[in-house]
Image (tube, rainbow, N blue to C red; front, side, top):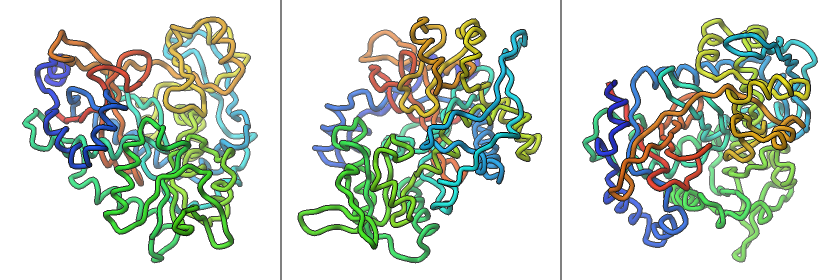
Length: 447
């Protein structure tokens, strides 16, 4: 057993300094601490996760390879705009009998639809808080999905800062000053779109934000902006309206001009939010992350393209990047009706996800599928991904018997650079923040 396996298997080897975490939470105010404790009792895990250098190196290599492929002209010209409701253009065929994978994807070299809607607007911005989510196991690191508005960055910054005085094995896999890193990220988004104009007003936008599970994180973001001298408001989209000179927030003290929208909506195409959509298309406000960021990175159909060697070669990807992506991303296909019988036979080795899903909603482990649910999946809008087992971490809950929890590792990325790395511990089919002893966990590099 390796050192990391031993540490992750021993619930007593390292435990979170919960007293230090409580002190960090109290510094945000007793009301904030109480909100987290009452609403999100399983937000922070009981123990850190340990990984080895080779796993971290592979995660960084996969991220860099994805970034290089997405930067290729052919990639942006052929992404499927999420708002258009177009079925994937990949021409897929099921071929039984291959030991490694029963499915092959033909080259993505014809029938492409140019994504004119999103490629021409706000193409200068990069998109904040990409979340590259990995499963780590004995076979290496496996990228299971990319998120374009990944939550948890501010919460993990607070958690990691609170644990800096611990004496665990290994080293932290994160930046030293998160607030400086994060505020500079948002300022850079603004500069890319507006140059030297001052950034004065930010809206943190989600549906019914105060009812959201991660509302405490919105509050942390708001305070960060305010400490930087930027007015920040947590609002729902309906509170915003457009004028000829930009986007405004209705306020009892007079309408407030909104320069930048920190977008936490899961309506990735903004179809349900015409005011924001129009502001985005016209460029009257800077919105990050936006529909173009989602279409280029986070639409799960992109995972099928990233694992298709012939399509990648046709786009101009180099051999080294193709090999890195093939080794680091589980084989993924876009579900088609003609694949029904082959997919049913292979279902136990597959995980099914809606192509535009989020937060594990509508995701299914193939082994658990009923014929009825499988029939719904075959109606379209899903991908099928080869299973990659998550890592496991043992925790002692309330000083009781050890409990083995699964974990995934999320790399928070901006402009291709990893800002911080955090794990999510859970029980069940997917991450859920409902597991005693589970939640966000620090990640430490051993060896």
